[in-house]
Image 1: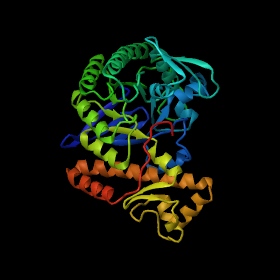
Image 2: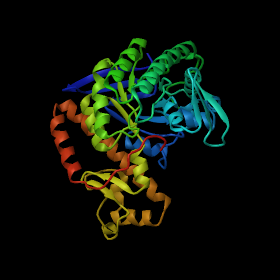
Image 3: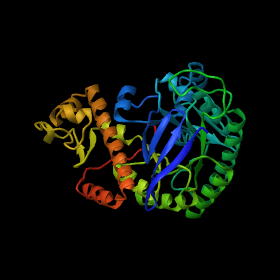
Image 4: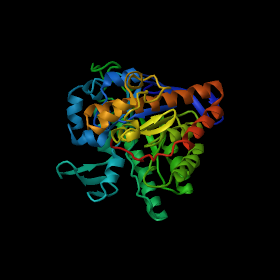
Length: 398
């Protein structure tokens, strides 16, 4: 099997489990850092390993444009190309194509669009998106879907949801027919004889902000049959309360014994909330994007390191954090780097924010295993109320 999912403990609807992939085990619930261009911005792979990242996300659309997914395949697959020995998930490119609203045309066959790099005409379909991900060789790949704008009329949302359901079937058909064309060993870079169990294809639920369409999309996607399921089309401009409502609407219609992946969220408080609701996997660019703007997450709340109040602060960024940044550098120094536009500021800030996200998710998992998630949630809500600074909300790319 290319993917095995085991649930080890439950606390209410929340679950602690393990994903077994060809490139190692992943404890869930898990937060996946986003490495859009086969790199998590500013953070080298050895540091990601030190932080305990066991799975990261890379973006098919961007790699499709540059260097080209056939080139990545020629160079030994994505794991070898980026020298990453652990698990990788690739998205299908559907969200990025959606974001090119002025440069794309959607038909039943697929999406014609112009490259944001050089304006060249390109085309992605369920079949070509699957082939691109087969070429990349990620452990988990995603069906090609259409993400609708917000707000969208019910008719627009229904048409898109129905086409996504048809695209899911086409994605699965192409994947099943071509998945054994190339495969990679579980270590970095070694190609082995072809076999059929090196990748797992997840389906994606759409339906915009309509409860009944979300339910129908989930049921149709499950009927097509996948080893895991994603909730897509959220964090596209709706309120956080609406996001949570759509997640709550969708989850009961997904198989209990399969991993559930919520795409493109969120703040530390949100990822805790969604894990408590029964989500197993999440990703977001926010830790690194916020870091590059000087917004840092700590156990005491959010800190805007650019503020003058930190110029004389010799204390660690977060006294409760054991990451290399907090163990070595003061708030005053981090503020100096940011004010001086030093590249190191983005690096150190990103390392800390990723550490905070990963530690947060590990704490959630530990609380589920102990059966004390309610106590942990209470502490998270308290810290959130005491942290008035604003947080930018964003999705891929990072």
